[in-house]
Length: 125
Image (tube, rainbow, N blue to C red; front, side, top):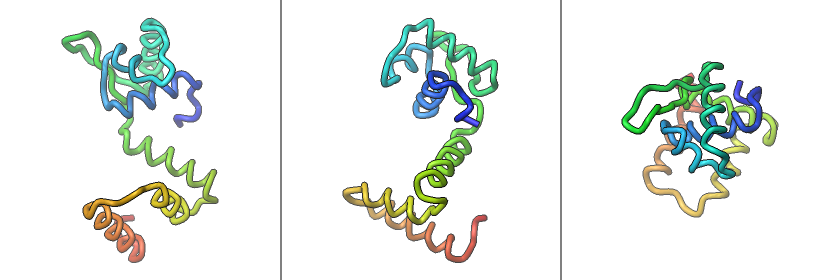
C-alpha cells in the first residue's frame, strides 16, 4: 500500500499519479517542495524497483508513469481517508466534499444523482 512508502517516495509517486506520466524533470518541477534532479531520479528508480513506477524511453529521456492503475490507488487512498476522518461513512465524506464546492455543473450534478441512485439499489457492486 502507498502508506508503506517513505514520505519522499510517496510524494514523488503521488505527483506522478497527478501528472499521469512525465520525465524526472517534469516530476521535479511539479513537486510542492522541489528537490535536486538526481534525488528525483533516485526516488523514481527506487519506486520502479518496488513496482510502483514503470519507465519507457522518450524523446527527452525516460518517461515515467505509475505502474498500478491510478484509479485503484486513488480508491484505496480515499477509503483510508473515509475510514480515518469520517468513521467509514462515504455519505459523510461526500457531504463534506460537496460543502467545499461553490457550485456544481449540470453534468456533475447528474453524475452525482446517478451515483446516489446506484448506491440506493446496490447496482455496480
